[in-house]
Length: 500
Ligand code: GLY
Ligand code: MN
Ligand code: MN
Image 1: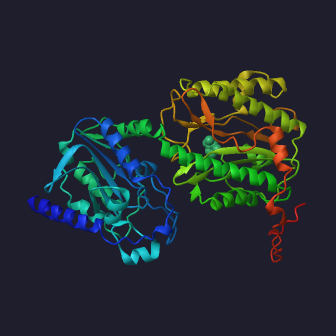
Image 2: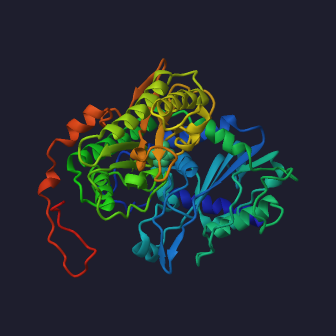
Image 3: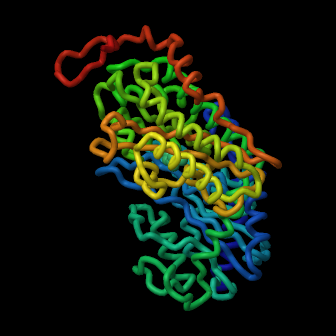
């Protein structure tokens, strides 16, 4: 163990030198509006303050997930890990100690283990910050290569509580001997995890100092209330997503495909340099809108007599919007479409009227349900309030942030929460009502920042009333002249834009 300490202090010295070493990132290669290193440091401090005495919190990066053979899915960092570190690479772990710890002559209360710099690997899969970049760019004082964790002389048994999210056991063992798989195996051994092959500790009485429940509550409390920096990023994601809705309203024509419509939204997101989608885009025309999480978006031609439901959110510097608009493909609502649309709009406005600190999530849902039930009854679609769940089967509100269904307390609304309100009515074919309603599916979803006495309607720029939508759809689009040559080789491929 003594040897371990000496070796360890030498490693720390090397890291200090690395921290000032040449940095391989050219400034122009990265956006400059990520969360600041001060944000992450302050969030770690806030978590430390909430942790119980003599505890340590342990976080792991998300695993890399394989798509097929040697192709992986695009990597996305675990939101808790991103929130606390700003590190966007895999194979990493973070330890936050409640009290300062002494290791190898150094005192510190947090340490991060990250991917080692590796010229060959970086040529194939991208640049790595390495411990040096993590200290200089992300503001950590102590950062080590992942391989050092096996020698790291931490005695987890001396803590009253070791807090971590339990493992789902879906991490692959890659060739690298310091990958996430190895970090988890080593942590389990050091921490006395009862059985390294066991799936979850969650349902059992804790046999030792391992606690897999508390961290979720602590992180809910932190992430549910947004800081100024986070609000700015969510607002950017929302405004970009609103711009996508506006451009599609202008460009939409009968005969386009669901994918093409999805592509217009996502092109706008990219044009504003949003790096990702907050969730798979939902673009469903006609009865496809009745499938709540319809992400196939396969219909080759949308029909002018239908509506199209579009639920999309740009992800901007990790933060996502969540906005749904449902519009008539012809540009004009039919009588039945307008009736259902206006019930859903009225339901949303009923919830907006009470969307302020002190109101509960339950109150918001109840406000929307009441209006939907009333509207469905008035139009003979149901006869009793209790039947409305058949056509409005989901909740109406959730936090957004680093996740689309973000962490946060789901009790009373508080200032600086950001939530959605998203009532809907979905009437599938063959429902027990007049067939004139069949295939109508409407969801209206907006994003709101809770202010001291009310809310700021962040997604207001996306047209929402019947008049706003019809007026926007009547505007010309730059895409009206975007005509691609027809590709005649296959019958099912229809690429020119002479929509019928
Ligand atoms: N886009 C998923 C949801 O609205 O909750
Ligand atoms: Mn939502
Ligand atoms: Mn949504």
